[in-house]
Image 1 (tube, rainbow, N blue to C red):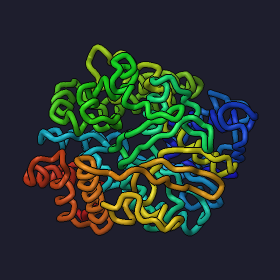
Image 2 (cartoon, one colour):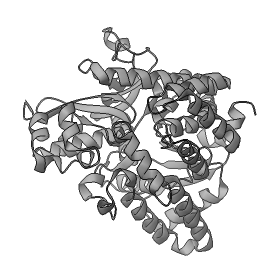
Image 3 (cartoon, rainbow, N blue to C red):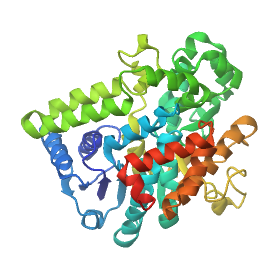
Image 4 (spheres, one colour):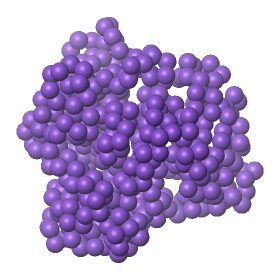
Length: 470
């Protein structure tokens, strides 16, 4: 079995290789998953060479055969699974996304609002080219997308590849697992399918915009008790960043990225007060890391481990008070990351062992199987939504959830409408649609600001300018 990693010079690759090596040895989380070859594709030869040095230095026993290429067609040929983790424009592009928005007093986070849309404007055309190449040389491959903004990129690629593109994020299932642990349940049962698992849940929304609305453990909904218990809530990172009072007012647990919606003014002020943005931190860290590995390939594994630990400890630091920034609690990072979600999905399809996950799928995917209508009737049938799914050898099966109502329905509908404008703007190079997308987003408070932000992205990022014919 062949796995293609698009963005194969990326920082997370060694974590995937480590797990696959353990699986080939019959140990670890995925003893039934046997991958013979991993092909790393990237447009940056230096980064590919650095990752090859890290993998060689870490020396995982029984690792699959590793190949590397800057030729997409050659790399993709014969792939059974594709992990799409590209970063079009690199961390330098992320810095521009942040700063252009912040200069106008608008959030520039890489997946939420203006910053996420700038990322999408330059990434959608490249993601579509990837989809077309895969349709030609690996039409049966499953594409597991964690290229951000994941909901937008997944929805765009599905225009070419349909249901074989699935978007992933580690945040929702991590939220469910931590909540299950907080109420005394077994987090390992969250992903189990069938009668007697003892855990059930209702989660709904879009990528980086969703809510856990019920959590049944032992046949009873334990979410109300969790929300009423200060000590239990303290185990939830969302509570410590968003605030217990507001979470109780909602009566549900929000995805951690809703910090940027519920505390937008505070988040922008906090980011602007910092010495550097998250993108600037990562840009410097990664530049140093890749250069150090190039200069000292014999130390590549040690250098990667040090950089990885620092990166994990500082994730979403702007959402935490200064007193909590020295490092994240172990319970906050116990979800396993994107790579675990990708491997869970890959394993369920490849081995046929069913698993329950939260994934980005099509709004009409369930209707095609059961004929009962759209998952979220407020949205278009081609909209990509994020909710529980059962995955097995026959593919991904979205599960129906309770109706989305009230303010949450309004927010999801508004943001999804903006995302669809982003896709059309990027596909057709239409600046007017891009302006409308930015101006209509709930975190952008003026159409004039939106126009200046768009102009700033076009002026300062050549890849965004290229999308719009400049």
